[in-house]
Length: 329
Image (cartoon, rainbow, N blue to C red; front, side, top):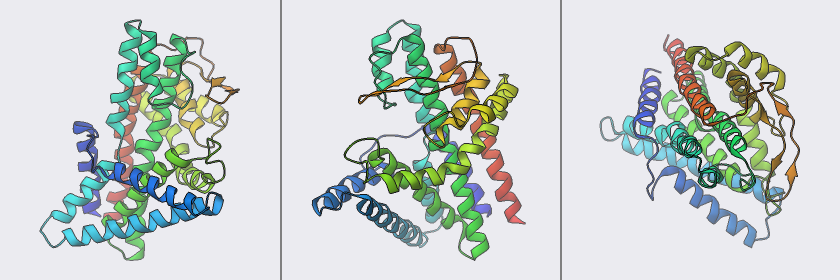
């Protein structure tokens, strides 16, 4: 379990310092390439329905589990190389600094008054049509993205790594390897959902299994996010009470079973409204508002959201470390 602590802390530190460098053999890019090839093969065989989507998920999870365990065991032949490999894998699955890297330029561009450039930058991280968004609409969407991706890119990964370590300890399996396998498996499912989730006609059936599994894996972390974000708001000097109250009150005002929890908490912390009608490429989707603040979101709120998430990430790390430390005894 002490090794689990080392892996988590070092992975967090690497992500905080280095972010997520782009290179051809990045583990998540390899996951994406595997999804694309497997999808083409299944569609070519006529397996483009729910069963085909289930085959895609199960097959890739089996392959990636075998690969992770095999690579770690192979690296164990060299002193400390297995530990280095596990740190690298968990670090590669984190996306916390990248969240700030993609969102901060939106705030800077809005401050300069370049709404067209801000829309273009926003389009890179959201699925909605950004062409009709005004200044506050761009800022609102950016804040929503920060809140939602905090769960997908960090909190859920830390949760499943920690859960994997505990499950490994209880079942007599190497806790660190079990934790890494769970973390990588979560990122695989999250990558699958991003690529084939049922948001288009092509994937309306094929992506259902993936989307359902992704929702299941994010169920607990999403609900935890209300409290973690509230604590982050407290640490940063924002309205933590309103974050907690609004998060618990408005968390179900979202089409997604999970996304609304962190977004509602963030709306309360910043005293703004998030959600509302959203224009996608296929249609205008009416969504209820979360939060009841009267301020129009602006670049300052994007920066504030990133600050809260930064504090919340340390709190999430401390919580995971406490659980892993308890497991040492």
